Length: 178
Image (cartoon, rainbow, N blue to C red; front, side, top):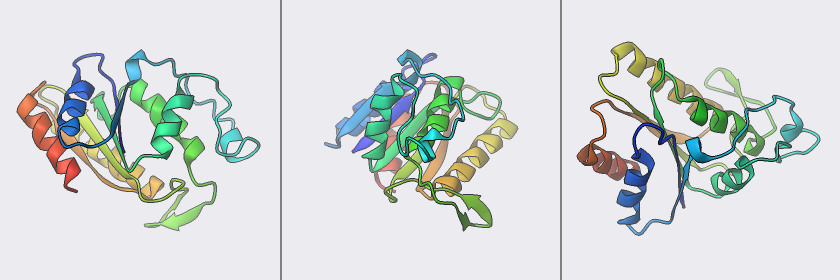
């Protein structure tokens, strides 16, 4: 199963990726993060302690977490904002901690937790128009760090020529064949 979570507040990137991936007969679930009621992480630590594996914040993230926990590939799609992701996608990323592995270990010289049920592929797609080299570099570095922390496989893509169906199809195909 592939889960797409996109911030579609500027263009409908998520639907375009979903359409392309559905043509391959993949099982796809898509969420538009900008249309969900997701509160920021409270950094309370309950998800790795008292309520292990479960976030205590009652909002739409509960339905999203179930799909993320069971997926083989997660694709986050966001406009690139100062080299990072939009606040809608950032809230998703922070709240994914509740399905993380509670044990710390060393990976590539860093203390990391990883994801429960190892084996998920994790992709980030940054979108925009004429994104600077500094922003691209920061976005790609952010993804590298997340892959390390999550002990996942995957890749980041930067689509900086605006909404382009051909580029979307090419990127979706690359994701499918990784």
